[in-house]
Amino acid sequence: MATTISELLKKNKAQLLDTWIQKQLASESLRDDLMTNDELRAQSEELVNALANIITESNINQVDSTDFDEIFEILSAVSLSRARQGFSPRETGLYIFGLKEAILDLLQDKLADNPTQLFTEVRKINRLLDSFSVVTFETFIKGREEVIFRQTEEITDISTPVIQIWDGILALPIIGTLDSARTQVVMESLLQKIVDTGSSIAILDISGVPAVDSLVAQHLMKTVSATRLMGADCIISGIRPEIAQTVVHLGIDLSNIITKASLASALKHAFSMHKLIVKQGGTDKTIR
Amino acid sequence: MEKIPILRMGAFLLVTIQVDLYDRLALTLETDLINMVHKTGARGVLIDISAVSIVDSFMGRILGNIASMTRVLDAETVVVGMQPAVAITLIELGLSLSGVYTALDVERGMSLLQTKLGPNDELTDDDDDADDTE
Image (cartoon, rainbow over all chains, first blue to last red; front, side, top):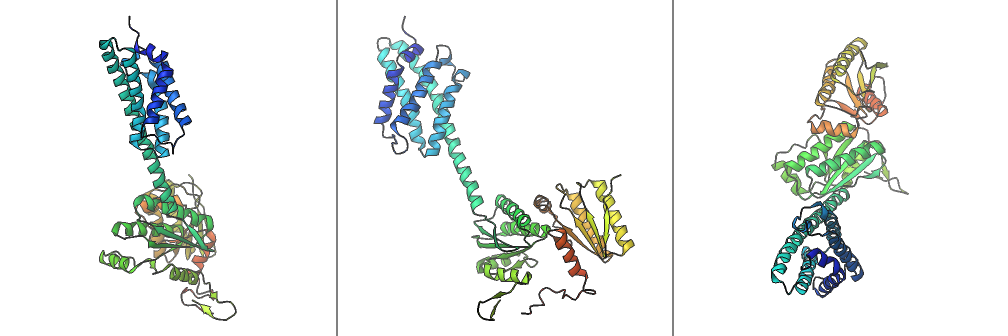
């Protein structure tokens, strides 16, 4: 009676691990800049141990058996961490394919005298490891998507700071195009800051907005109206000549909104609304 | 039945809404307030909604209606203390409450009403941009 594949794996765990590590070290996909050999060894060992412990003659044919949940967890963790560390999909894929190679080598070695059994076992192990690879890829992509999502959120937060530039005067330099999601963030942070600081004037500076179309203008108007509902006045500044042109060509009516060409003139206007006067030190000269 | 108190402060009426307005309450408030404006000859109405955290389009309309009705009776309406979430909701509902004056808090609302309506007994110039004396 020939030995079964699960027994083979259990018995030759150490050899299997060694072969796999050898393969990984020899492979050109090895990234010793991202991960040390010790880490790689620990990671691989965990997976080989789990596989050898879990695999039995009955579950090897059922890749969706709950027995493999532990392995899927390990694989997901490995592939998520690799996605965050900046491994390429190819490198992550080769990692798990390396294990398959190692197992196939082992089988060939041990079952060389029984080609029929070798073939059946190879098919079984192939199917099992293919499903492992699929899981690895899926989680890898999920990991990348998480990274992208987090970056998008961070950019949105960073690009819409609300600054208090004077007592009772807030400025909000908008950088990048305004879409619905960003308008929401802009509005929320602006309105909250108005409440927190008790400011009565908000300056929306759009020098950093590359283009104003009717949708962006609509979003701007929304923000202005919301500010007005809170009881604060809103000034739109930083309107470049080409934006003024597009606004007029699009037939957008900004006449009931205070608009200024530069942040400086918006600030001057805000000062005059607060009845503040700026004086140059030492002289009686008043700057307006 | 619950009622929202309307306080008289000189020429102004002060309404502080401390509960979330449901439709019937809002309608009662509208009627009471207009009657009160008529009875007292008030020149301004100040509605504090700082405690209101939930709005719907109906309440937005009621606020607009109150403003229009008081204007017919020669009084101005100032809504003060709107929460950011409420403001965003109203804007998303397409209600910008044009015709309603707004202020950050009761104090600023009062001074806004005074500048809007008090040129007869106050010496201040009611035109903001006109006085630029050094």
